[in-house]
Length: 115
Length: 117
Image (cartoon, rainbow over the protein chains, first blue to last red):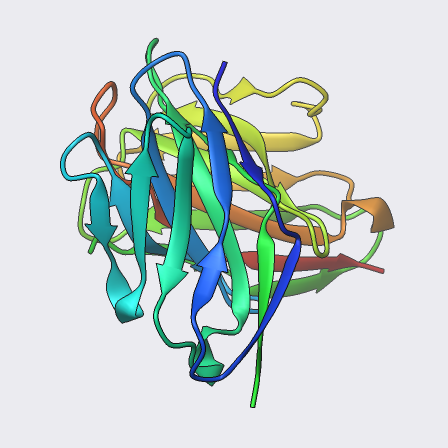
């Protein structure tokens, strides 16, 4: 069965410093992995996705993530945090097989950015 | 990217009444739509999966008679919370995918904040 574990429920950084949000996955298949961002009382926006192509994936707003099969990790990074990055971030794995794909969500990491 | 529109964005209703939430794919045909529920400061919980023209598949623990899902067309799915109670207050989010069995992206609606008083 597929699952994702987000290792930190809260991360706080200062504006202009690097961001690291950690995610480990478990999958019986070669997984597809996603990072979504959710601002308060809003829907989810896709930041980036890995679908078995390049292991280093670049997304929107300067975010990127690296798929490491040996470590079963898909950590999200950004070189320099901006105040507008403060939000909830979800790591997601897709299950395949059968008639329908399902998204399995991690528990989320709340990113706070201090001025 | 593709657009999924969810309506209403927020609703307040009285206990015992029913509320319908719509999820529309605006620029693609959504063969599959998903309904999620999100409790405060928690992750998204999948409630049900809806394929166009067939009955929805509910996750374990989700009452199908309370959360009625209809996916009558390739661009519209609705979730009706019947006889709502305060414990049904939550943030409901839909998502849609264009194809099945393919590594494709799910597009999310803006969410609906339901408050039952």
